[in-house]
Length: 255
Picture 1 (cartoon, rainbow, N blue to C red):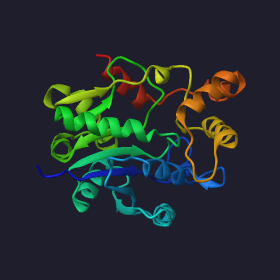
Picture 2: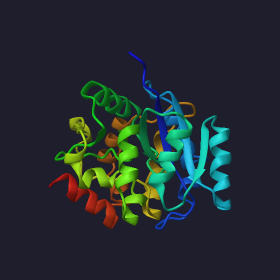
Picture 3: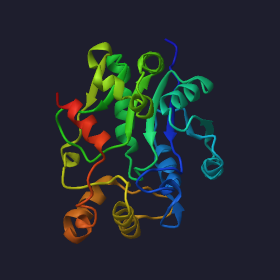
Picture 4: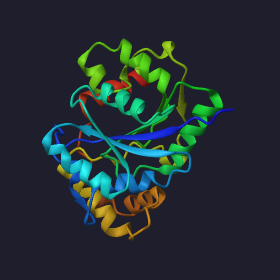
């Protein structure tokens, strides 16, 4: 049996709507993107890592950081992120793509490995979040190259091109879809570990200040304990609302 090449593709650009430049904002004296890359490097099932950004001048700084971290880079379309992923997957001969967003600096490498295992075991075309159970783990999904190509050929609306896999979630019967079951400890709705706003960034900096040690990634279970023991910390970003597109994506999971 020929081994399938698994490539993690991290989407990152400076032009974020809610918090521009967030991917290079410092957390414990390192850019947020640096932390994401270092956490992905802990995955055992990934063959290579690519940071996929845009060809805009402002995003050259992202390419510079990625190269410092020793990972591959790709520059493509700013708004057609679906095409950016497809072209990057083609360039780096990916059979299986792990889609990573660059604003989750506590992304869990062991869960990513479990998602890859589930994709291989079930021969699934797409592995995402559980359809019913909530999870504080965000920013990762797994898709086969053939499914990504089908999505590229089928998605016609702008939002479907900007949000790479939303077409699959709108049309689950067209694909072999599986959802990863989150560990009980991660089934929370009272904690938010994504960085979209200043308050999110403030919380992440506080978490890293307390838990981060050089050359060692933070255990997500320690983050949960920290927030449980410090309600004021947990409250820092409790009023942040999720974006409309993420609200829509969640509604698709629960249909």
